[in-house]
Image 1 (cartoon, one colour):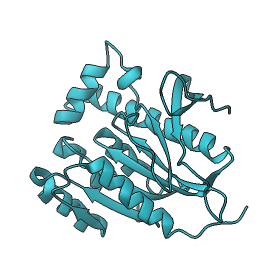
Image 2 (cartoon, one colour):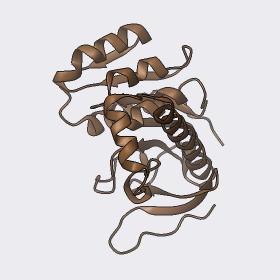
Image 3 (cartoon, one colour):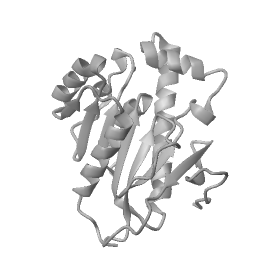
Image 4 (cartoon, one colour):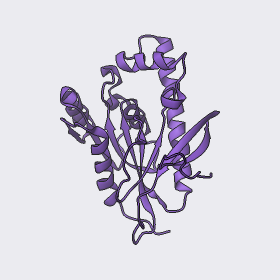
Length: 228
């Protein structure tokens, strides 16, 4: 797995990967300076928004990928249907098949990106977190308890339809940090998710991605460093 250097003013490293037959592109941004005594950076993987405009984190590497049928992976035939399904919830067998396929592909994509990051020098495979926004929050909920390399999940569902509340997709209780973030108008839903999951929620989050990354940095800083 080879990471290509930044190009055309884009500060992110790039890595071309194959996931369930799809070609995907992972992006990686390293902090400035040296990683300290451990010699390796913790990592937060972002799924959901386009993160290319983010500034460098001070003490944590950032990885990012487009989710299936979104961004550079958009499809004229399927992307609009997926967005409608996420906004209202699946209304029939074809919607459910589309949603199931989206989640299966996304889980595979995340696993491949984690593989690439874990194999790169300077990154700590024992300290990796997942920041999922919108549909990324639903993806993260289905990964918790399934992907042991992720030590923290910071989920901000945004405008997902109530039938797709991430709490409904959470696997059995799992170790590690779980936090749910919501804007004011979704705060009651976030509180309900948190009670059901036995975890914390925040409402009034004006910048859920920035808050998710701050929580990820805090959680990973508290995760013991494993010496190589």
